[in-house]
Amino acid sequence: MELDRIDRQILNIVQADATTSVQETGERVGLSTNACWRRIKRMEEAGILRKRVALVDPRRVGRGVTVFVTVKTSNHSEAWLQTFASGVAALPEVMEFYRIGGDVDYLLKVLVGDIAEYDLFYKKLIRVAPLSDVSSNFAMEQVKYTTEVPL
Image (cartoon, rainbow, N blue to C red; front, side, top):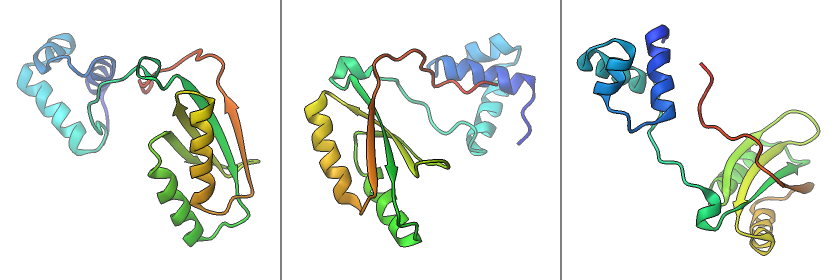
């Protein structure tokens, strides 16, 4: 789907605050409410707008420790990948999960409450599938965080 200037403006508005009404969004981009609604609907149907959510502050709900976990494996079979991917996806502490190129095979972003909770997570992770190496990097400070895709 080709996005024009108005589509991008709409996306910037809803990324910043998904509770902005269609009427207000339309006014801000110079469209009627119906025309704006049709554009939003079209972007939802195209999968550009995947869903609308509320962002929770992890620290305020007891999940203030961010850990970046790198995983190496010597097994690169499709069966192993399916087992590992489904097992990791089922762990609620995992916020993001990537298969990557470079020195490691997988990168996980994990949120936990403290080191003891991370240790419990680690023990669950290593039971998912055979792994060659697991390394943990604890974030000291979050310098930048956004959910807004640059348009």
